[in-house]
Amino acid sequence: MTNKELEAYNKNRKIWQVCAITDNLEETLQQWVDRLKIGPWKVRSFNNENMDWMYLEHGKRGGKKVEEPWEMRIAITMVGDFEIEVIQPVKGPTIYQDWLDRHGPGLHHIKEKISDEKLEDVMYEFEDNGVPIMSTGKFFSDIHAYMNAEPYVGFIYELGNCPFIEVPEGMTRIFPYEDEETEEK
Image (cartoon, rainbow, N blue to C red; front, side, top):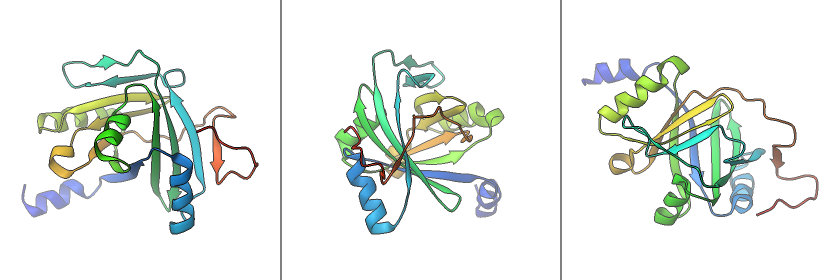
């Protein structure tokens, strides 16, 4: 593509989120709050019981649905209209634990917002361009796909529809915790 073609192609794209992986969610969030004054954070637990599905090695050839128990803790906050996410893998097979084992804490992915009607086509366009689908998942109306851009840019690229989700009461805690309870680690 020429520079003008790249500019036109990227003009209406929306980078929605950046995500880091950690092995200690509260400690990491406290650093974001203390050092960068970023927060407060919505903290949730995602697992095989509250997500509709998660597939690994998805791609056009199909995927392998994760059947064994798995869990991750996720924290999100907004800075302007940009979302920051921090994920701590807890148990089971996830791309998050794999990344943490290979790279340690730090940048995991950048997420682009794609409309529902274009999401599947864009996933396969990336795959046809040598960036295979690693994992897909669905949480309520949120559908996402992790694309393996690591060999080319050093991190994963996520595609997702990024809807606003109203989660059930009691599923979210706000960090810094102001209720004196301690969060399970």
